[in-house]
Length: 320
Ligand code: UDP
Ligand code: MG
Image 1 (cartoon, helix red, strand yellow):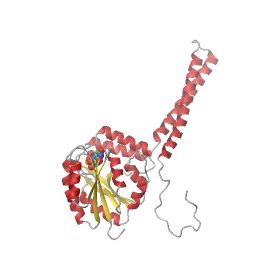
Image 2: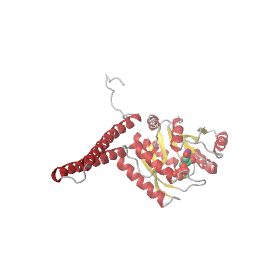
Image 3: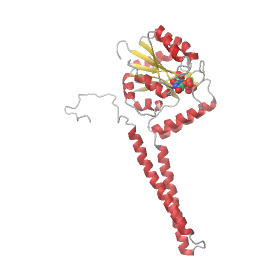
Image 4: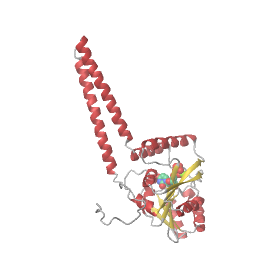
């Protein structure tokens, strides 16, 4: 870590005029006491209220503040991506504008970063002001995600986290369009550590996520980090095809042995079952290739290096 390290606090804000002043006052107090070169980057994600005017006002008053206004509402994941792309500091810390993530915890994040961790993620011990339904669906989602995806996404984490420069650079290499940020943060790897905290209730304003949005968010997460649903379709297809072939064979055998009173039934049934089975199998095969194509199209880096010790090989293979 450099002598006087710099830290940019990235704050996505969508219609947050009701809390922004209070948020900034609390954040500024924390940054004042911190011995890093702290800055704040507000991203206005196409707000329709006074959020942008407030950000301009804050920037005029406080030299540490920069603002970024997106052309329309792109959603939190893309607002975060835009914000992180614009960070040139030694580390970035993501925090919600609604004071659910207490800014007073920032010194703890910085302390873990100083210890050498690249990613310090907040892990919610308790969620105040949220219904049991939201908590239960969230728990279920993390369980499904953990089973389906090979990237281990820690449970109960939000976007409240600090990322070192090299983790940010690595994240910058992931340019896929469907961005499930929690998964991408985990995919990067490096030295990660959890920091437990109590998530408060929203200070003012309303949540931007309803159950429909959360459902879509869950589908996004599962399909971005796993092709398991395609694989399941393949197995269901194979199983049905197998059943169809067995049944067709049975009808043929039965007709040969005992005859069939309904003329045409065995031929039609066998043809339908055979064609249906063959089609399902072919679909499964196409699904497998499609899954591979999908993963390739993300063009993620194949690996990321943490450390290299010893001299580099004298005749290193050319980089392709
Ligand atoms: N947010 C955003 N764009 C959106 C939705 C939300 O930038 O389209 C921001 C919002 O302003 C807040 C953070 O993302 O700072 C979390 O949103 P919210 O509090 O509504 O989510 P919840 O805490 O209810 O999951
Ligand atoms: Mg919130």
